[in-house]
Length: 287
Image (cartoon, rainbow, N blue to C red; front, side, top):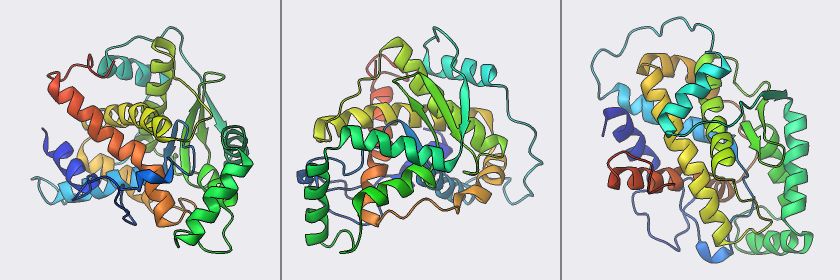
């Protein structure tokens, strides 16, 4: 394993990843709470970017040649070039090239809430909200749907919609530099590629099965995104591109709900990386 991925894994992995454990601020959840409170869809939360930045900061203390000023950032690669790199890393081929659509945070929030409303029955939402309040996981005056809206708007950099096959890049979400722009596109292009080849199963369920499915989808896209960054950029370039975006508003989610949102990305990436290791770097076990 490269120093980059070692640093990333050590930062992202919980120290004691046992099940049925509640821990604020990391990726552990109580599985008995009937799955995720917020269907995360196929989005790239800015909190995932922040995890990567922390790993890179750790890496800067482990590698030689760091400490210099980040180089000036050239323009991002064209979409087709990014897509070809994704194809090579994923060992799959696009049937047709998706086109990204720029949306505002308000549009992203509206589309996210529409998806939430279609997948999360109101009675289930109210019941889960009551349980979370009784357990002290969210404030008494919190509205779970409104908390979700903060994630879908301010807290996401991009997303892919399997229903229409289109990529969305959220304007003003820190995607104004080439590193973050290429990272987000590589992540979402992975979803688009796998949807074209395998079909991304969508379901209104919010149970453990749906969470496991989301972890496979997001874990694959996250593993490929990290590989893309490692292959495409130096540590200095990545830090220079991401530091300005890592501290942007990621929404108003309490630590518990943020951990649930992060789990498919962090836990899923661990799972996918283990499958890749077992297969000697090949994707056959993931496929």
